[in-house]
Amino acid sequence: MLKLDPLFSEGMILQREKPAAIWGKGKDGERVRVSCREASAETTVQGGRWLVHLPPMEAGGPFELEAESAGVIRRVTDVWYGDVWLAGGQSNMEMQLKSTLDGLEEANRVHEPRLRLYEIPPVNYDDGQEHAGSWRQAVQGNAAKFSAVAYYFAREIVRTQNIPVGIISCSKGATFASCWVDEKTLKDDPVLRIYWDEYIEQIRGLDLERYFEEDRQFNEQAIEYYRRLDEGVPAEQLKPLRWPPPIGPRYFLRPCGMYESMLKKAMPYALKGFLYYQGEADAFRSQMYERMMKMLVSAWRRDWRDPSLPFLFVQLSNFGCMGDEDGEGLALQREAQWHASQSIPGAAMAVSIDCGDIADIHPQNKRPVGERLALLARERVYGEPVDGSGPTLEFSRTDGDHAVLRFVHDGGGLAAGGGRLQGFELADENEQYVPAVAVIASPDTILVRSDRLRKPVYVRYGWRNWTDANLFGGTGLPASPFRARLGPN
Image 1 (cartoon, one colour):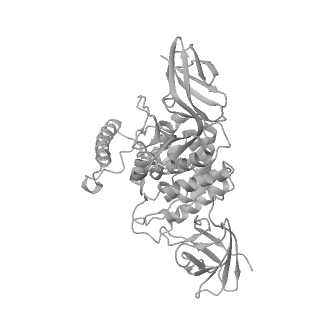
Image 2 (tube, one colour):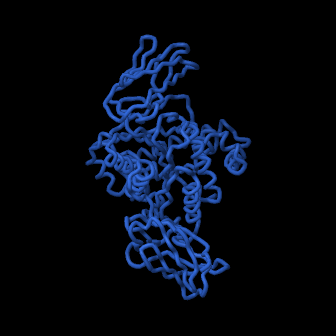
Image 3 (cartoon, one colour):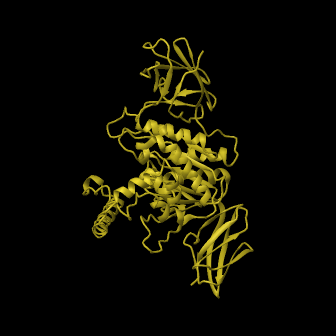
């Protein structure tokens, strides 16, 4: 009857220097004893479940973990202590290493057994079955299906901190942020509960029998579609998959759905922090996204019982939005993400504006994204003397017909990524923007002017879905797009 949760399996990495929660199932009333590294903890099974906390341990391994109850013993070998990060979000976090630029070559040559990943099974709804994943090492032939962003992040942390690193991968393509929070938290927010209310309205009067049959047919088609994609069949040779799936209680995009069917499976596994790459699906409501991010981060920290857990996330990359290159939908979303990074304690944002693909919302250039997240972690979490941020506007003012912009995090001097600076615009009081010429006047200062404006009032940079913006710091990190009202001279 004694069972360990599938997370606690061969090759696992437990979080160092924190109490390690270990849980599973058993027979009510029976005692369970869990031991590892000469430490142990005991509890009694209640409601068919049990949970203990082992005391904090230093990094190291391999060890053996043992759970015993009523004479039944479960042993887990090759257990290590190191740092564990949960990687969540939608398709750009889910994107596998083999599908990225040079990723298959990387997967075929990597040998980093201290880097391990556990994928939370991508289950759309609670079907009453136990879906088990497994811990996999980043070794040749084994890492191809790792989250590419999480892999490149973890690879840098293993190498720079010289510790084992575990990734709990928990992402699902196309999902909204509202899919990843609990029902009470979402419904209690007077602004964000619109996501819940809209869903309830969509399923009002739903014919469940018809819905379940349509859902069954869709899943059969989807399984076959993705199986053939995984075999290497080009998407253009396949019959298009119906989208969206039928909306109902098994709809994976329903509010709080992924929280229930995936995220809860990882709670409360002790963590070092969170990685997050999401936002494309929520760009249609960018005005709410900062509030949503605050709620999500707060809820996750609450669920893991640690209000100080770092939250490192990715700002959306360049994308042509299917022909709407000059639109501002993604620009507004990037701005919302920037504000979230400034208003959420313990959060930090990796800029990826230069990693995009004009024709694909899933750009293949994932290595710099993961490495920039790692650089933020090295600075903010591990205390290394590195700067994980690109140029950031500190203040701006007018000077005659010029705008004067001063930056911090310039990393030894501002630079243009190829040729002259691009992506700057100025506007008058009516906020009618015109292209502007920008020049680097000093290591931390840029002058911007336009012959079409005598006295600029506003400035913006990289304010397009797809932008040619190319401002970098001396360390090679890009500046985030921004807009600002200019101060007086």
